[in-house]
Length: 174
Length: 177
Image (cartoon, rainbow over the protein chains, first blue to last red):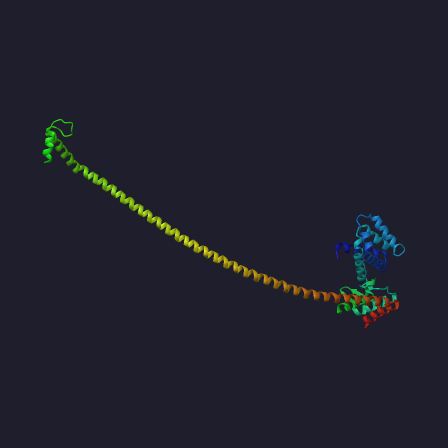
């Protein structure tokens, strides 16, 4: 991870701490980062050097209007306005990792074909904590390519229980 | 007798003939002739002999030189004839070698052509085998892809919210076990 991304992540975490809502802001930033990473058109638009910064900020404001905290919108505007929109996903992941670490946890990135209920996320966090021996902060990424089941990544550990992987194994065996 | 006749003729006096009328003139003439003859024999004859000898020697030398030249010419002719013979032999040898080389070249060319044909045939067979294997693998992969694609479609269609939730719950349960 580059120094620039670490610098932005440190600064944004400090702002979230100053706002007193690290969990909420980091979750929202993570969701925005995932949206940018998975949407090519959006990523291209906020990375376009020919487009004025005000226009790129306006796009993100419109997307987050009524869906995110003011502090989250301000942080996103700061990154996009600085011309680092393409790095927003990496910066958001770094912020999530720092927020989890500051709370004595690890980030568990969970890819699922469908959204998980709060109960499922809670039970998943408990099960992961019991298995890994450390508290985890579950970050769910909705990804239809998973087809079904979950793929959890904690640090270098990947726990794959997805239908996609089973289908891939079936393809290899054939 | 003759002298007497000469004296008679001479005694007739000037008679328009070449014999002098005075016999003394004749004696003197004889004496002069004798002196001249003496000097001729003593001096002139050796000179003539020497000259003739030199001429003969020169002629002999010339003849010898001519014979030598003839011999040299014959030798050169013989040498040229020998060289011609050698040239003919060399020519025949070159022709024979050229013929042999051409024959060998023909054989080598035929061998190379045969080898080339063999190699091409072997490569063609290898390519055909490779293509068979590749085609088989491609077909297998395509069949697998189609089968998995169909399976995925079936799974997606059959996975409703309850099914998705069941898969998640099953995953969480297996984590805890």
